[in-house]
Amino acid sequence: MKVIQTKIRTVEHFTSLDLNFITIGEVTTFDIFIKKDNNYLIIIEAGTLISESLYDKLKKQLRLYMKKIDKNKTKLTCESLKFYMLHNKDNLEKRISLLYKLNDGLFTNYLEHPYNKIDLICVDLIVKSIVFLIKYDDKFLKNTIPYFINEHCMKNHSLHVAIYAMSLGNGLGLNNKKLLQLGTAGLLHDIGLKKINESLLNKSTTFDISELEEVKKHVTNSVDIIKQNNLHDPDIIDAVLHHHEQYDGNGYPNKLSEVEISVFASILAICDVFDALTSSRPHRKQYTSFEAIKMMLKDESMVNKFNQSYLQKLLKLL
Image 1 (cartoon, one colour):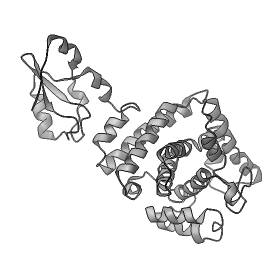
Image 2 (cartoon, rainbow, N blue to C red):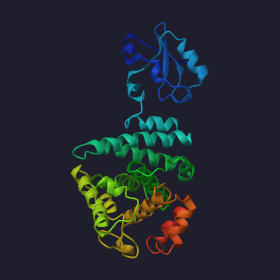
Image 3 (cartoon, rainbow, N blue to C red):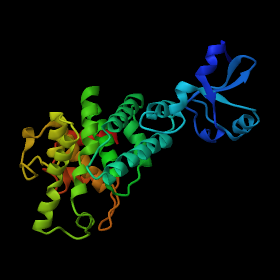
Image 4 (tube, rainbow, N blue to C red):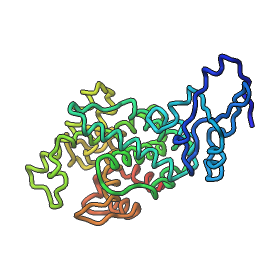
């Protein structure tokens, strides 16, 4: 047990801790103190898993304290995510659940906002947490996929694409700055779908020509919304605009081919389709990761659509 030497003014640095902020089975993200005479004593350090017996011991304390500067760590927010991630980095299921929870809030707020406001600070913090996990766990993607929620919706799909893209980008040797750009593009690549009629997006049969043209507008919609939010990074904008371009030149919106397609856009194109194939849809089966890669490499309808070397790299990461 660690003793904190305290002078009178130090009292101002501590505040009472509500036991409701402590959960059995969770790792605490802050130090927990008791007060004895004029000293504050650490009884549980940040990073400790709260067992049932440990929780019972805390309940017996007359009063618990925490540092005032740690107050923002008592609940999961975008700002506190890095602390939660640091203390849960070895818990495979917990760390992805933290990303899902914040990503859910990010997209819920965006979809409900009348003027399409995106919390870019939260986007940045989510993406930075993914970079941290990729660098910490050299098998991050392989270890994370089993915990994916494979029910297709914009928020889950966007998070998955960001994770796939950043993992692939890391495997291709992209530096941290580029991984952050790529992850941001992955999270935001489909935000323009908000402007497309939901009944059209949920249609279980094939789109007719006019419907397909309407759906294709989502890439330019996404770019418009990104710029509206004062994000003008040309690499991010290019990746979002061109994530449906295809290696054979039959994609949209500009029918780019091969080297005309940027590295970011080529990566997003692969990850976008890969996640779609491995997610459940009402009108078709959900494919396994290896079935999806095999289709993208060899299926007649897809064989010339993607950068083959990038696909092979993704296969090695699975």
